[in-house]
Structure formats: C-alpha cells, structure tokens
Image 1 (tube, rainbow, N blue to C red):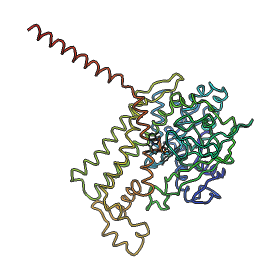
Image 2: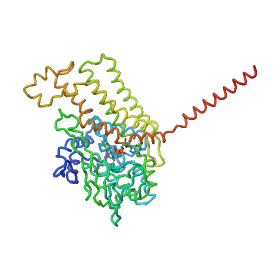
Image 3: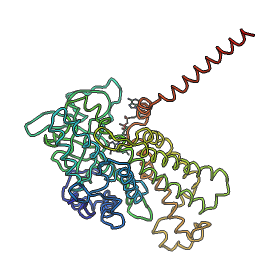
Length: 492
Ligand SMILES: Cc1cc2nc3c(=O)[nH]c(=O)nc-3n(C[C@H](O)[C@H](O)[C@H](O)COP(=O)(O)OP(=O)(O)OC[C@H]3O[C@@H](n4cnc5c(N)ncnc54)[C@H](O)[C@@H]3O)c2cc1C
C-alpha cells in the first residue's frame, strides 16, 4: 500500500466507529461528518492527498527498501540530508494549517519511527518486544496510519506524596494478565485528535515510580473494545470566513478511558520494567526526534504570526510609530532565533550507535524552553496592535445583508476594502483570542509537558563543561596575576 489518499483516511476512520463522546452524546454514524471533527478531518485528508501531488511527492514521501512510497515522517534518518528531507516535509504540511495543527500525523509517526529505531533496547527485557515494535513501525508505514497518544495520568492530585487508593482506580493500570494480553483499567490524559486516528499510542506516564502495574507501553486500534474517548467541547466554527482557523484545524482533546481493555501481547513493547521506562527517551532519542518536528512546525507558525502582524500594521497604517515596529521586530527576531536553532540541530546531528542520524538535542531543547515563554507574547503583540479591530468583526452574513454599505464605508482600512480587512482581523482574532486561539496558547505552553519540569531537565542535561572550564581558567589566571603582582611588589 504505502501512502494513502485523504478519502482513504476518512473512510478508514469512519469505518472503525471508535467510541467517541462529545457533549454527553456518543458520536454515531460517520465521524468525518460530525461538526466537531469534519473540519479537521478534511484538513488532515488534504495532507494525505498532498503526498500524491507530483510537485510535492519528492518532499513528502520516500522509497522504502521494498520500493514502496511512504510518508517522509516514517523515514529513519541516517544522514543529515535525511533530516533536511524530514524538516522540509514537516514544514510543507505545517504551512497548510499555519502551524496550528500540532498533531498532524507526522508528529506521532516520528515517535513510532524513533521508538522502533531502538527496538533492540526494548527487546532486552523480552526479545519479542523488539519484534512488536518493528512490526508496529512496518505496519504503520505500510498503511500510513495516524496515531493519537497519551503520556500522562489524570490531574487528580499532583502532590509528591500522593498515592492512589487501589480500591478506586483512576490512573490507568494493568489489573490482570491473561494468555492473550494485559487488561488495562482507568484513565489517561490527554489524547489530542483522540477518536480520529487509526491508533492510540500509550507510553509510561512521567513522574515518580508508583508500581509495576503502571509501567507499560503499547499501541492499539482506536476502536479496541472498552476504549472510550471523552472529548472536550468543540471549538470548531462552521464558516471559513467567520472562523478561518477553527473551522478547519480544531483538534479536539480527549480523556482516554480504558474500561478493562484487553491489550494483546503482540501490541505490548514494554511492561513492568521501570529501568527501560526511565531510559527509553534517551535510548530512542524520542525527544530529539519529536522536537525536530515540533520546531519545524513552530518556525512556520511564527512566520504566519509575523505575516499577520505586518498586514495589520499596513492595513491601518501604524508603521510610522516606533513601538509598533519594535513589537513586530520581537517576532522577527524570535523567528530568526528559532530557524537558527533548527538548522543548528541538523548541522550538529550525530549518528548514534544504531546508525540513526540524531539531531542535536541542545538547540532543540533551547527552542522548546523558549517557545512557551515567547508564544504568549506573540498573541499579546497581536492584541496590542490590533486593538478594537479585533472585536469589530461582523460576520459573513452581515456582509450579505442590508447593512453592507455601512460596513463597506466604516470598516474599510487604509489599504483594504472592508470585507478583506475583516477577513484579516478575523484571522488575527482566531489565532489569539477565540476559544481556538486561547487553546493554541495553552497548547504551546504545555503539550510537550510541564514547562517548569522541562526547564529543570534542560538545565540538568545541558553540557556546561566548556563554560565552567573557561571561568575556571579565568579565575586561575586572575589568581596567578595577583601572585605575580604581589611578587613584583615585594621585589620593589
Ligand atoms: C491543549 C493540550 C493538548 C495536549 N495534548 C496531549 C496529547 O495529545 N497527549 C498527551 O499525552 N498529553 C497531552 N497534553 C498534556 C500535557 O502533556 C500536560 O498538560 C503536561 O504534561 C502538564 O501536565 P498537566 O496538564 O497534568 O499539569 P500538572 O502536572 O497538573 O501541572 C499543574 C501545575 O502544577 C505544577 N506542578 C505539578 N507537578 C509539579 C512538580 N512535580 N514540580 C513542579 N511543579 C509541578 C505545574 O508546573 C503546573 O503549573 C496536552 C495538554 C494541553 C494543554
């Protein structure tokens, strides 16, 4: 098979009839026609279709060893050129959604590729776990599967000394083993795109070790019996004019409930081994591979922010004020810094012991540290410059009503007729102020984990040797100078 079309993606997800709940109702019929999912599924379908466009195929796909075409995010990089190929493909897809689709399929495909590249590590516990991972990767690539994932436990009590009462299971854990597999019961957070992907990938939740029954990793089809996706209220608008982003790119987030779910042994690749759970990120270079995709997307998203801000400035002619250009420069400077970090990660990439070309984690982590801090500032800049324009936002139907001539006169901008001006300001509003826009800010803050814990692990893992040696040499030199100076004094 190899690469699929958008139609194949939608049909496959419709057929699987996963157990998905939205606002108190189970989704019935075709999920691709449900208002909460239709926009984003059509956008996702477009991504799959792009793989078949002759002028994009060399970027978005590669030939596997068996000669089939596969999506570029499944490409296991062994050279710097492969990393560049992957980055160009990530960005080609990101451009479609202005970087707003954080969970386009390339994100988790990258995770599956990275994990399987270290399959032997998982096989140390049970050789068949390596086989299970290989087979997952091969099948995902062959059928162009999409994945959602869940890596954290429910937010009930985050105190360091909290232990769950065994009688009332909340965080999903293995409650039984059978000859067929493990039985998982409880809940996990927070599967973005839960219910509209082929598979659910589950990795051990971070935090303290709380027992072997919580240590597992597997991937199962989204329609596995007992699996339920409890979605938040959808923020999807229904008009491309009124809601230019949410109508197309709203990725609903879901709580994942496991109601005594049987996970077949052949889908498990880690179980009851805290040591493997602890080291799996380092061994598979999962963070570096994921952050390479994340930063490529964030560069595109930042380019969009700069474009929107510049068009706002032009539209209402505020460019002659210094503070306005200073604010726009903040975004431009951030963009350049992010691009430099992305390219540095590829330039400093190294082959690991398994022959995978791994982008340098340090610049990628630096970007991941910065983005949750600078992204809210981008949204603030849009608000500070857009001002009342971000609420003077008549709808598509206003423009086809009797008040159109008023709108044309009073909502025109220096460089744009009213309708185009409103379209631009609606885009700025949907990026930063609508429910969709504010969820984007929360997403950029948290989707890669708690930014505070991330900062701690970044600092702990950062190689400070050179800096420390330089300061040490400086201090030694200063001490020697002081000694020389006092000898000179004595000689005098
Ligand atoms: C929009 C969105 C989409 C997401 N999509 C996914 C997804 O697809 N898959 C997935 O697995 N996850 C997803 N996540 C979840 C994400 O991984 C978590 O939000 C993140 O790991 C933080 O966990 P938490 O939300 O439980 O926050 P908490 O851990 O509950 O943190 C709440 C607050 O307490 C502080 N805190 C808690 N514990 C500590 C501690 N030990 N030390 C210091 N401070 C602490 C935090 O700093 C924070 O300020 C998503 C999150 C968001 C917001």
